[in-house]
Length: 174
Image (cartoon, rainbow, N blue to C red):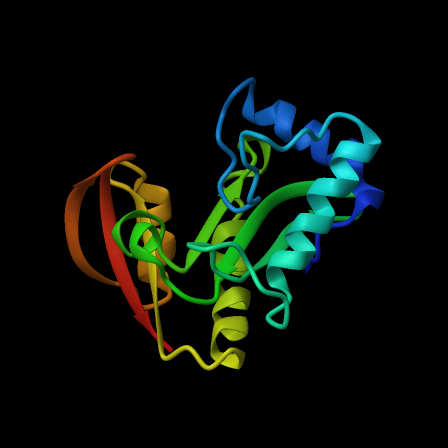
């Protein structure tokens, strides 16, 4: 049975296996991984997990242009199946491209309903934060993600070209 958990150093090896499942250099949505994060070493991985924890703490100030974000890993036992991120607000970039919620499921765990399940759980967290509606986007040709968003009541606002390519933009009223 899957569960959502806060990022943890305990799952370093399992997270690396999930990353390798995506393939070299692939972007894994929902994990908050940035190009400067070094995650292969235990120390680098611990620093990354600490940054993710700091970003979720609404009492901690963030750098200009950053927003607080709650990160969760989708796990089953000690296997990392994916990640999901709930941004507490929208900056200009997130309004144009990223939205409030981003998620990704490792290739070997897809087609099991995990994204739909995880998005439903994160919508509950969004409600708890006091959000009244959330923006969720996906690549224009990612039909599985579009169906996941629509399953939760996502209403298509538009399809637009963004700096990351064409994207569908959905609003979900909470």
